[in-house]
Structure formats: structure tokens, C-alpha cells
Image (cartoon, rainbow, N blue to C red; front, side, top):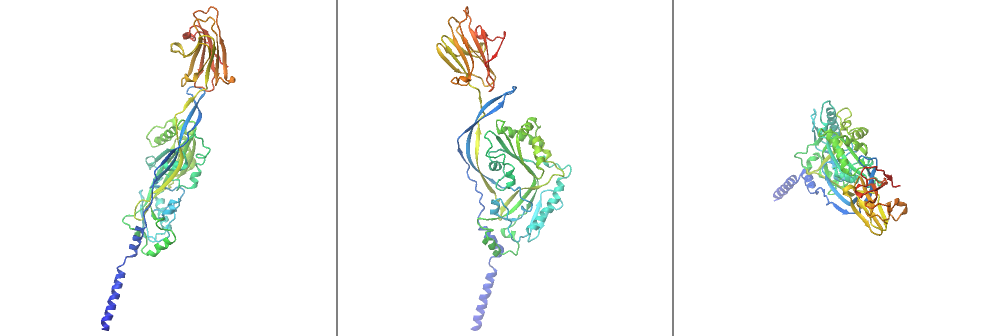
Length: 531
């Protein structure tokens, strides 16, 4: 009986040992933990756009073929905009090569906050490859693959790749150049719209554009922001057929993961990510501002023309170069000299910066990150700004009035020759006409004031005002049209011409005898200033 009980106890112990041996492995526990940790949130909100109060401004614009300018009034409708955009390529200038390591495990929340914090945990082998032809195009960093070891591997790859890119005759520049441009209302909005996130860009970058987006920037200043990317090569972490547990060394247990969770280094609000790829190269980020043009389209055309000429897609127009030379340009550069970048834009010769030679260096441009299950960990950035929609501008002319005081049939005709038409006929009393209602958009306008055909006892006083007649100081000219003995069949004609498109010009006048349609027929024209 005792032997039977001992046998039963031994059998039960063996079963318990077998049961424990058949339980979930550390790898299974780790994979299950991360599978249940949650998903990466990359929610893009719907854009909002609320109409605000309009603003207007006046700007002088040169008149073609003349030595004076014309004033124009521009009216801009303002909109308060909230916009968000998703980024799969995370722009990381300002970070060093040691900060952005392909294959590294990082805290997801740190990336959201514009930082890169590597998780302190032993890794499995990290396999890297580069997309240029070098001897060691693939490298394996053996477990535990500490950050220093990954950095050494990346440095070795870059050391081989950079001389390859500087070889004479390696034509990789123009064809690979990526170009983006947008109208800029604020630094955050412009970065967002050209596919870069201001959230992950260092303060040293935004400082380059403080003057461009200062609060003193006037509404009539037009600005574009543009970027020229030259990606040289990309180092990729090989994540094929890897489970969440496969990222870690065989020595890592579930307790190690739990310790990181207790320190808030990982969790449902701080998912671990791995850097899938890092792209290296050159870049110019710049703004072009000008307050002497009608629209940002002129700046966009100029910048696009320079880029197109460099890429061999078009011939460089000198008008594009003049536009850039007459604009304010602010520059931030990566992988090359800032002064060279500025000169390249100022002259329209981008080869001064994007030149395969000894000065070419490949710095960190952007990276991609994934969650441990291989899904893309896209970033979302947001911007609140004021957008403006400005009209084409309305020409502003000085208000020219003709005032006629008369006691008989006195008329004002607009135009010359057979194209004249009556705009004022005053039988008695006082007549007043605002000539701006009849002046053309440009050029010189002529008009006549003449008395009746039967001029006996006809009398009129004619005054020309630049500005409202209620202000005596605005009067530029005054003359009496009076009866002339023996003038049967003739009229006395006072002719004026106004320089409609010149805000500074005065009027001119002359007096003739004859029918109105021939009052200035080229015979002895003598014009005098209304002053």
C-alpha cells in the first residue's frame, strides 16, 4: 500500500514537471506582451479654416516704359487654419549619426517629442545593408549589438560610401535631386506643407528663419519656402521574418521587459520602435521673400526655373535670377557650406553647392521607424497659422474733379476726336464731375470743357481739383470761359490731359477756338501745367 502511494506521488511530480516544461517560453511571453501592448496612434485631424477680417495695403508698382510708379491697393482675405499632416519619412536634421542608428530600438514617445532615446537592452544580431555598391554592402552586428557596435558598423559603411560618391564622373546629383516648394505663412506651416516636421527639427534650424517669419513681417511681403534634397544613400535594417521577441538577445527574459515597463521606458503610451532606415545626403532648406511682386507665384516660378535648369529640364531664364537677386533669401544647409548654398541660390547656379567633389558630405537627412510588429510608425505634426488670399490689386489714381460754375449751356466732353462723349451738361448753377470714373486704367486721358455754339452772353468758370473740391488747397487750375465778340459759329474750348496712371503727375491744359472735335488737331499745340 505504501509503495502504491509513493508511486502515485512520484507520478504526480513527474506530471507537474512536464507541465512546467511545456509552458510558454520566454520568447512567446515577450511576443505576446508586445502583441497586446496596443497600436501606434497616428491620427490626422480634419483641417479647419475659419474666415477672419480682411486687410488691405497700398504698394507702388513701376509703370512699364515710364520713370514713375502707380499705386495699387491690394485686399487680402484672411483665414485662421489648423492643419495636420502625417510623415512616414521623419526629417531629423540636427541629429548626429550616433543619434540616428538604423536597427536601434527606441522609445516611441521620445520620437514624438522630437528626441531619440535608445532602449538599454541586449539585442539579437542586427543585419544592415546599404544601397550603393561598396565592398561591405551588408554587415552584421552580433548580439548583444550595443549602440556603440551599431555605430561602428554604420561608420564603416559610410566611410566606404562617401569616397565612392566623390569619384570624378559619378553623375548622381541632378537626377536624384528632390524639390518641394510652398507658399509660406509661418515656419510651422511651411515645413508641414513641404513634407518636413518642425517638431523634429532642432532650434538651430528655426533660428535661421526668424527674420522671415517675424511678427514685423508685413502682409504685402510674399514668401515661399523650398527644399532641395539630394539623398546619397540609405542604410536599412533587415527586419525580414522577425517577431517582437526576435529583436532581443536569447538571454532577455520577460522580467527584463517588465523592468523597462516599470521605469516607463515602454508601455501602451510609449510603444517601442525600431529605426528601419536612415537616409544620408545633402539638403538646402531656404525661404525667398519679396514685397515688390504681385504674388508668390512669381517666386515659385523663379525657384522652379532655377531647379529645372540645373536638372537639364529647361534653359535658365535671367528673369528668374533677377527675381532671386532682388529678394531676401534665408538658408539652412546640410552636407555642404552654407555660404555656397546661398551663392548657389543667388546666382541660380545650384552646382555651386550640389557638386560631386571633395566638399560633398553625406549627413543624416531623414529616417523611417516601425513598431515591433513591422507596421510603419508614422509621425503626425500640426500647425496653426493665418492664410491670406489676396486679389490682383486695384489701381489707385489721384481724384481729379472738374467743377463748372456757369450761367448758360456749358459742357464737358471726355476723349478726343470723334470719340468724344458728353459727361456733364450744366444749364445753370454748379456742376461737378469726378474724372476718375471715366479715366482708363493706364495712359493719358484727355477731356474738354467748352461753351455753347451760340456763345453770346455765355460765361463759365472752370476749376480743376486734385482731390475733393471741398478743400481749397486741392485746386490746381481755374479759368473763365467768357463771351468773345464775333464768335458766332465757334466755341471757346479748354482742353485738359490727365496722366491717369501716375500718382505724382499734375494735369496739363490748353485753350483753343474752334469746334470741340478739332480743338487739338496738331496745329500749334501748347500745353501748360495746371500748377
